[in-house]
Length: 98
Image 1 (cartoon, rainbow, N blue to C red):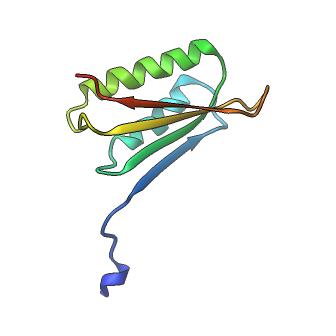
Image 2: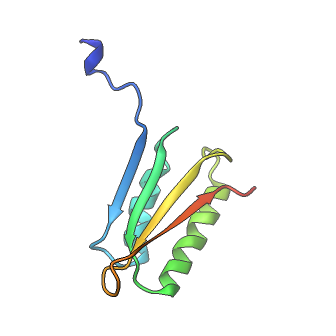
């Protein structure tokens, strides 16, 4: 096998979930990001309401703080897309805090 055919690194892992609008839909795709090592990790999710956004952010913070294989210097970028009102995007950058 030629060296050009071998994957040596993955610099970006990007998950999207814009059709599902429940916490469970977010969680499935977010949890996949935890398997990516040494990659920039991003997820795009549809912004449904403040209650769901708060639940998602709480889950991400708690998960990262308890996940042993996530380094303190690593970040996860969460992009919320407001598909109904403005079409705008909001990004949260989350790191391990303990």
